[in-house]
Image (cartoon, rainbow over all chains, first blue to last red; front, side, top):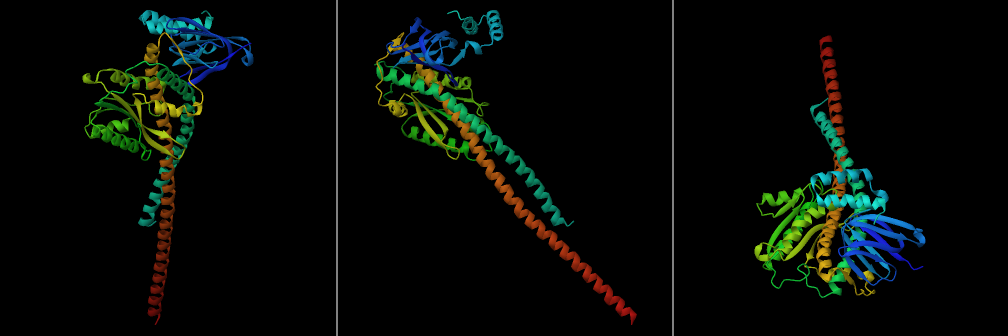
Length: 127
Length: 306
């Protein structure tokens, strides 16, 4: 099966890299799914969960990450997801995110609320 | 103990204490260099991917953007100078400041006004002492900068670039920082960040020069992508500069502290020589006093016997 190489990179570290058969991310004009052989693409990401369907060496499975802003670029079967902040779902501290969500709601901080919400949804695996 | 000997002993004690401190600082700095280098390496994938994307948009589309086009008559330039918060690093901060001064002179000679933005207490106090105007300054994070710090520094700069020149905006953005070449060499460099010079980013791309940049499909549009991309690009370049400057600072501290330790050792050696000589002189004097006294006493008793 065809596969594409994915690099999920945050500003200060490389979060994940491996082979995948499908990557779903949220751009500012809607969700986009990239499969191997997609046309070269450069898009702006909204903060939201990114789902990577892994295959090949990385094993069959799904990796979900919470990505807050950034870019998606795809060329030559190489997909890079650049984000200022990116966390894999198993790195996210659920309790902390829940607390942050409560706090953001009480302070009516829309940006913080969205961030916490994205984190929680990434953990739940709901896209 | 003689007065002279006591003075030498005291000086040796104080120099030894100083040597212990400088030795400790040297080792701390050495361990921090490695950490800072690791941070530089960790930030590289993001920076290189971002540069690739920027190059792709800038070459792959005919979009004109405020941050990429050169103004015909640039009248004002911003300089971001990165120094350290703390001293004890040899010529580290003053070299960076000197490089900024040269750049300022050059820009002024080209007929541009220069706005100074400064990171690090050393640079801030240098400008404050000379009563020069500083547009904005940041202190407190130069030893281990985070991405949030870089964002805070970048925000007013990007805002200034986007503003109209007539309303106090700037046409160019330069950054002066100390590049970490190796453990032994750190050189202050000045780079023009904006307007984007594609030759510079092409240089970084040298390795992948053979690969032709594909025709990208922009989502939602080339303008929007560029709008979002360029501020991130500036942030990541500033972040990289801050990290390199931090690594350079630690390397400079290590070197300065190493030579301080060596000097202290040298000083202790020559002081102990002097102290030994003083002790020996004292002993010789005491012996000659005793011998002189004894022989005087012997002469006196010999005289009274007669």
